[in-house]
Length: 303
Ligand code: G4P
Figure 1 (cartoon, rainbow, N blue to C red):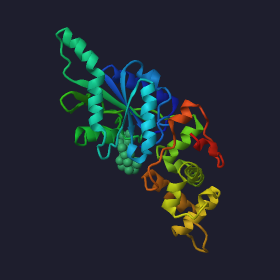
Figure 2 (figure 1 turned 90 degrees about the vertical axis):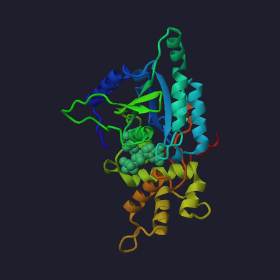
Figure 3 (figure 1 turned 120 degrees about the horizontal axis):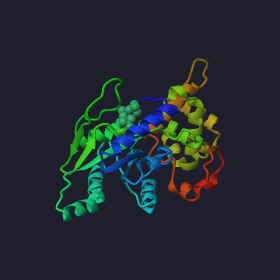
Figure 4 (figure 1 turned 90 degrees about the horizontal axis):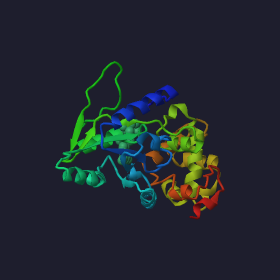
């Protein structure tokens, strides 16, 4: 999905979600486990307000398991329930069901004491494009149930998808805009494929990614591309040439096809072939330490 977000679209998206929030008991906020802060909508607290919320760290199968745990702790400290999920395999889905029951326990008990019964908990799934909303809805529903977007001119009745005896989901996810005003977040969104490559300089993007991987995950880089000792420390442009040569990305005359190497690196990162990698960790946010995208900033590995 490739949505161009203009101020008018943001206002419309926000208004639509605010309307839908009135219909539900809880919100399931999807974040990309590799970049939870960059994949978070900048106005999320405003939009969701006091509504009960579960944070799903989706694509957790692609993220560093140890850092997934750190994020769970981080959100716990904010008194928010966060659950690592792989929406493709379905790992973690049961935890969403039990967390939603748990969150509503108090309300259910209150209603019960008044002789009333809340039969099912209703939930709305929200998140930025490509974070996995439709995949999660379909997995929870056990079929292709998700409506991915609005069709102009067609007003559709709201459909509720029953997920187990106690949870119902709105079939249309709430689509939010990403954090593109922040350069670091924009890069992270581009690395993970949330921003379409066609509008990006993929050569620069893959060099930036290589610099980060060499800094944070040198062993994974070495092992995937069979780099020699200290090769991961070479400047990213040169490293791309080495990888290009090893992978046969050569054009006539023996030069390296940099476009092909760039595409290969981004693709292998995005589908997890380089390993399970997290680009953001809570420590950076707890200590409010800015990440430097250039090489040689080894201090950020220390904590
Ligand atoms: P959206 O509705 O939020 O826009 O996202 P959607 O479900 O369409 O998912 C976007 C891509 O992310 C899909 O890849 C989907 O398979 C993948 N995905 C979703 N959840 C997970 C997850 O938990 N783990 C992994 N590994 N992948 C996940 P795609 O079909 O290849 O689409 P595209 O990337 O080619 O657009």
